[in-house]
Image (cartoon, rainbow, N blue to C red; front, side, top):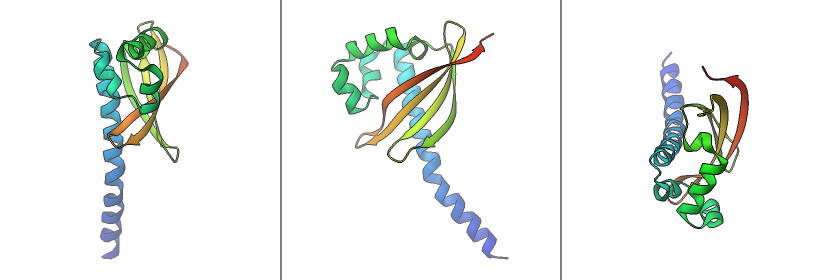
Length: 133
């Protein structure tokens, strides 16, 4: 009878780091989207992983790529976090985004843990079948 509370506490204790990781990842994505909304590409660039920073070299180039290639991320109408999946070396955070065009997209953020915390290693966009109201 006393084993059940101990097991329950152990399970809850082990789940705490996972919840903290999920919150940290969501904070990074939220903060980057906020920076995009403010056209603050220097700040948005700080959330990019080293591979992205090396590829684009400057916040301006990075901003241009996002404006032109990812308008739904640059100026989302709304967004909501969905599942977080562990892929072994990284985490994939799915985000449902309503674009300015009225369509819904799934943005799959590839997140990697660096010495500076969670960073965005890439984003894949999938257009859904639904149109916003």
